[in-house]
Length: 115
Length: 109
Image (tube, rainbow over the protein chains, first blue to last red):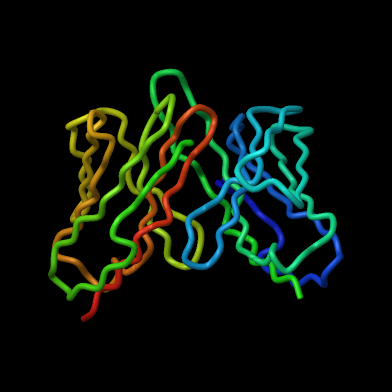
């Protein structure tokens, strides 16, 4: 049971470099999310997707892009890395249903440092 | 604007103490409230609450939701050092989860 898998676990980028954080889930969940977590802070939503081909901005989307070509994959792209993007990034997925809530399943996180 | 507020921000207790963590929320299209425990890695799921007044219990942890007053509490009895973590409250509303900033709990031996 892989669940939600994120790669890489750690990365150091120089200012202006670009990279893609990979996220894949094997639970056939329609909903996927990208969060960032800064020290002492809660999780802030960057982007989310309710299904393949559909993405929406969250609370802090600037400097990021996403795509959702398949149900399983939801990569997060940083085009021009900035020090403000130093953070821990979590990918999550869920499968909401009409009768009530659902939990979000999290990947193990990517610790990104921009220098 | 949807928001989730947790209190206290941090807490230091001795082993054996009982603690109560608070979570209040203001969201539209509420679906559920969730509690997670985070220990320097990904959050791990504790409870999901959808109905008022029904206590969820798991060992020394319990939680209850009040949908009229828009809050939830997480109780931990007979705390142990292994309970030291950040406890996150999240509210599922619309298509999103809204997270509080968390309560950092430190349990001293």
